[in-house]
Length: 480
Image (cartoon, rainbow, N blue to C red; front, top):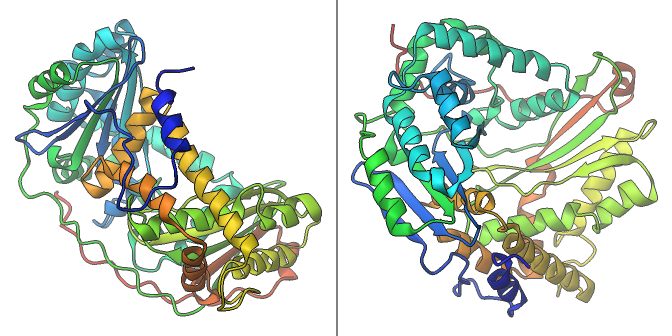
């Protein structure tokens, strides 16, 4: 058995925790320090036999793209960060990483940009030097911007042939009328096509967002914490704060007052229809009771043993794939049920079943406002323990530790909020889930997207008119 799992399995077998009794997840000798420049450093020693994960979590994502013309720039900048510095530009840097046996990559979401590496422990010092160099002294020129904008444009063109991307883009545009979640991470067509001439915007983005006080560096694996902290102070201490940075006042999405419905005609080849029902839900904050309840609500609605999955997939065969992810957005976002239909399935029937099962979770369902039925309490108890165990057992590698701690620390400012979330999951009761479903899974908070062939859409209830989007708060002027 992996030595990483021994304490976790013990913790998973422990009695259900109260929310104010956070279990110990992080190893006792985990070190958390903030450098003078504001960079948060978390060092997690693990028994990983010569392997170490290095992750830099940047507190910047698509939701920060408030300056007109910059949608997609968080993702664009992810590409540009591999350009390196004047001292060690792109190609020599890549050769150095190969020599060190480092595997690196990055990803961008609505809320984060994350740079992650896996390396032999013996390469850690050199890897930290390379990371500190590019974050403190990134060199960008017009040639690099034009080259990488071509790569982004290629990704954008590829996405246009994906029906899931078309349904997702339509969902965001309908569900959010003010908040920047309205635009996809890759950006809008016009902004992506203008990226080759975006060098001034890129440099402004670097200045405003790539700042040490908005970064969390997580080093997890076969390491000595004191040694790692000394290395990080040397490698990253020169990454300087850069003025005041961009304002973080994100426009608040107004409360949704009525159901929304959009149709997406699909004519770019054969594709199974999609039905998406999404509800507005609170922001996800690890350790908060509402967020733990939100996670269990999604689990109860869409897991493979849920009534919804049983009806749609197993019994009626209407759906080939059902996806109900845990909502984890930093601003108020969406809990969604995403169904890829079987050929010939009726989208209206699929939507109706999704709504019926969402209603059944709430006090508006068959249980009424009285005590929660024993079978419902049992389902919640099973979901609660499954969620806690999956959290504990997911921490089975340096990269998994880096991801879990990096997300928690970036959202809350406290890496130990991961422990608080495990405790909050253990404290959720059936009445909490029922109250959450009553408050959140209502028709007035819902947005429905149906994608399919035009003739299929013609037989459905017509789309509902959307409220006009309000103008976003004006951003800073783009430098000329």
